[in-house]
Image 1 (cartoon, one colour):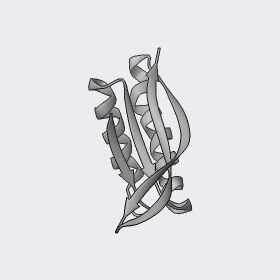
Image 2 (cartoon, one colour):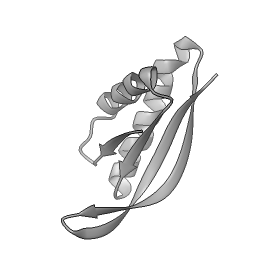
Image 3 (cartoon, rainbow, N blue to C red):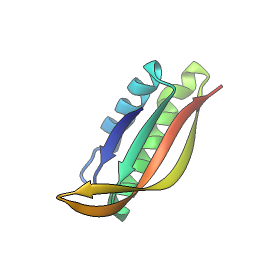
Image 4 (cartoon, rainbow, N blue to C red):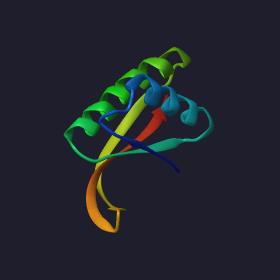
Length: 87
């Protein structure tokens, strides 16, 4: 499964394009964010991506969860969103 990492500085439109592109070839994509600002950008990107895939008759389903990631040898908790297409 492809993993997209979203930060507070990520452009939601660019991330949405990446989500839609990945979902053309894969059944799902994982998005990881750490912090409120990054989670906000990720949710905006998912909403925009839904608009990108809607004309094809697909809908997006999003499953949020926690995941532990290592950053600079330090364990951090991130929010992950597993995004899938649904007919």
